[in-house]
Figure 1: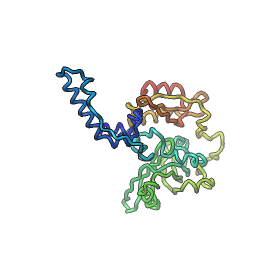
Figure 2: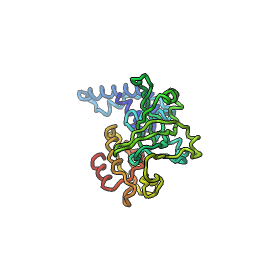
Figure 3: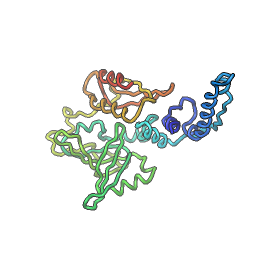
Figure 4: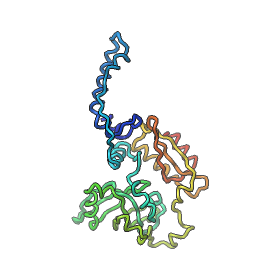
Length: 304
């Protein structure tokens, strides 16, 4: 089980074999490992050295160029590490998403009062339930480029969501989620689904990124606009992380520190980039958090 998890997480990518090839040869690799352990155990009482004895252990490995499908590969990473490492499920929709005006999840804390927003992402999970009045409802987990978040789904949209998650192709698509929100009394906003749209229908810009109700000033007023400036305007602050030490709890802690410290309005703040290192190879994960050098130092000292 450990070997399987390491393969799926990409721990052996440096050896030049596809993850699927390693996965399909797991039984052969495990058998060779058992033989190697047995030889080493017997080497203590042998006249020959350990190296001479283990050199006779052969690995019956069948090379393959075939790799897991992108979404399957990413799914394994999320399952084992709690994050996507080799890419993001929304990468293939990047150009479409970038052309649409929408609200990022890392900007949700700027929402006030009640209103409606447009969010872009994919469905990560959905759970349907039954109310005391025998009305169907559910909770949907939506993933955008920055994090995942929950929204309530009422009866009128439950069947639509269920039909999407039953179809693997539809489930892995990106959608526009028209969400109502309530953010009163300084509380974090809560969301409920009003409609789900395909990306093509959003490209004309008819659905606005945000509609606010009960606000005294127009949300588009530049003086009141606290949304994130484009990350490309900021220098980068890179933190190196060891893949073998990563787990779901650690990633969540880093995310919370960066989210709470996010401040694009501070002149000297920089964009946070995570450099995940695995046995000689590495992957850069560009976040959209803009944080200070002191926060980067705090994260590095605690987790790097």
